[in-house]
Image (cartoon, rainbow, N blue to C red; front, side):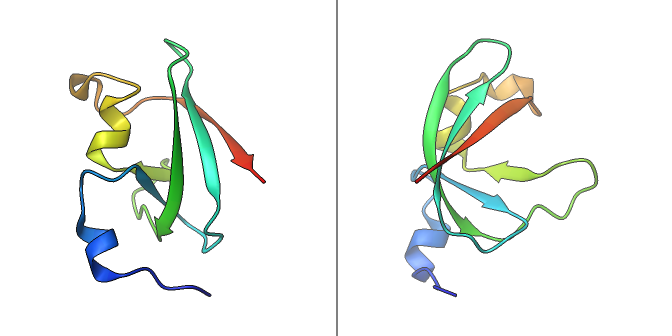
Length: 80
């Protein structure tokens, strides 16, 4: 298990996501409504909210959706 630096976890401008696993891989997330995509790295565990599988950083979210959308549907592709 690899731990990230504290500054990496707290930097809201980085393109990252939290997922309920520790596979620290790069992933392509695509918004199913507008086909916009972003490449992000998993660097944290979570979310701990029912019916959600990922949490995106603010900067990753706004690159694929309007903040007013709140929760969106995405497809996830692991980059190997």
